[in-house]
Amino acid sequence: MPVPQMEDWRAIAAGFQERWNFPNCFGAIDWKHVVIQAPANSGSLYFNYKSTHSLVLLAVVDAQYLFRVVDVGGFGRSSDSGSLLNSAFGESLRDGSLQLPPDTVIPGAERLGLLPHVFVGDEAFPLLDNLLHPFPGRHLTRERKMFNYCLSRARLVVECAFGILSSQWGMFRRVITTSPEVAELCVKAVCVLHNFLRRKTIGKQSCTPIAEYTDEATHTLHCQNALSNLRPNVLDISMLTLKTSKFACQCTEKDSDQRRVSAAEKDSDQRRVSVAEKDSDQRRVSAAEKDSDQLRVSAAEKDSDQRRRFS
Picture (tube, rainbow, N blue to C red):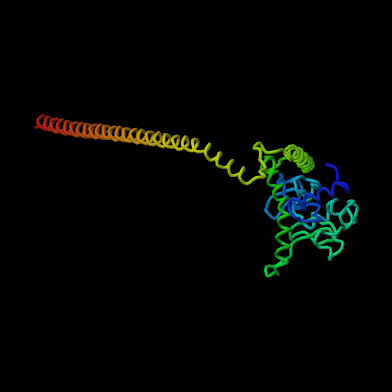
């Protein structure tokens, strides 16, 4: 991923001005934890506040959700400011080697004079000459609330970019079971592929042509024609809905009949089984009683025969 040059930074700032109404912005910066398997003998280096082991992906995103600067490989235990200060991007931002354009005047705020170009982040990032974060606290003035709203609106592009990245690539939704070096290469490759796919979709025109009306009467006539063409479709849709509801009712009645029949059959089967079990139990009891009676009778006869012999 090439490092943006001065003309690239100007194009990014123009995109933020046009799309998100935030001037002199070079991109939104944030970080993301990429969950990995704990490396051997790593201790707590990769253990983050979410109780998982991870690498830190630090990214700068432009107005079109493209990754312009990525820094992968920070330890999971590092904070936002620590990840920024320890990254190559943070060092270049501090020493002024990013080839940023010079300060300019914001249109409509000429009284403020020359203002620097900035990156926007959340409250966890430090406040620098080229890095802004919202005003802290709740009880803020109206001007500061408006500033926080505009800054947060521009900063959301990096959150959306991370969301798109996670939804498109399954490796961010599970634990990466490779070494940290291989995981770092995989994350960088996915960021490049994300930019490739985004550039293919940016600038595509909508499939539905949008007509431009210069006359109000022409626009009204077009709307009336559209409504007249829509009425048969609405009728067809209503008929289809009615048929679908009837079919659903028939299916429901059929299902209920089948359920009743199956329940009745089940009850009859259970009754037959219970009657058969009861009959078998009675037969066993009667057979056992008969056997016991016969044994008692035979024992009594035997005793009587023995007594007659001895007498």
